[in-house]
Amino acid sequence: QVQLVESGGGLVQAGGSLRLSCVVSGRTFSIDRMAWFRQAPGKARQFVASISWGGSSTYYGDFVKGRSTISRDNAKNTVYLDLNSLKPEDTALYYCAARSISTNAYDYWGQGTQVTVSA
Image 1: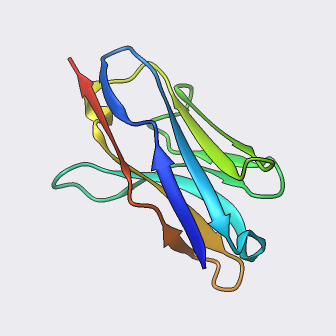
Image 2: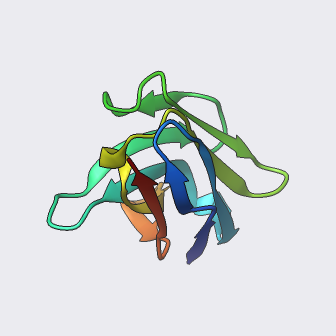
Image 3: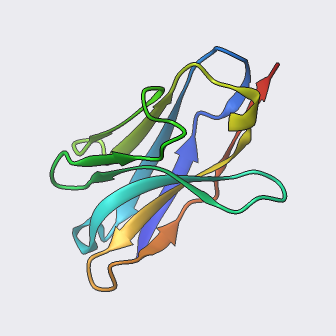
């Protein structure tokens, strides 16, 4: 099993920034990629960004390109998501997820951290 714990969410004004953190524990050798997703009330879950666990390849959702950076610190088993130039429409519950090597699916999820952007 892999456990994920997010933190760093909060209330921020439009144009502000936040850094989300996701601490990974457990069988980290069983995962190959980490990602952030988000879900706003009444809306479908959206892919935000991902990063390989052992390398540096990254992908971003179109709506955050240029405003967000995903990074990792393997020594701390932590993945970060820096959100900049935040907009009210970025308000959502942000989840960290880990992709299982055996299933090639994001099988492990954290509890989420709330990001609220005021106008």
